[in-house]
Image (cartoon, one colour):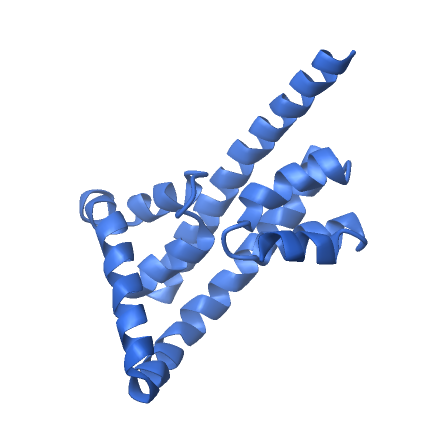
Amino acid sequence: MSAAIIQLVSNWPPELATLVLAMVPIIELRGAIPMAIVVWQLSALSAFTWAVVGNIIPVFFILWWLEPVAQWLEKKSSAARRALEWLFNRTRRKFNHNYETYGLIGLVIFVAIPLPGTGAWTGALAAWLFNIPFKKAVPAIVAGVIGAGIIVTLISMGALAGWEWLIK
């Protein structure tokens, strides 16, 4: 799926491609920023900006629509109910300790750590699962996305500099 999305956006303007890739779960800005810098040759600032904006956009929809969609799915399908329960339990397991220990700072840290299974999508899901109010969840997730964006941009710039040094 990810390869198909990357192929789809490869002929788009780099800024739009970066924004869209950052909106995609799993890829998020962790994949969009390196693609923007290394493949599409965007500046680090441009890659960071477009990826952060793209990564934040889905957060609003997740927080607004997750509850009504989950309730509708649970009513319509026992398989969907079981899948949602699995997803909810998994997210609670991964995030519960951080949230109990650190509160909203735990959400920021969870979103900011650029590892698989963390990020804006999972952070929004965790905020919903832990009933964090929208007005508190959004700033925490945005702060985490900015933190992750800084980390990934710096890593991408370092990797690019190392690659350029290697091939000279």
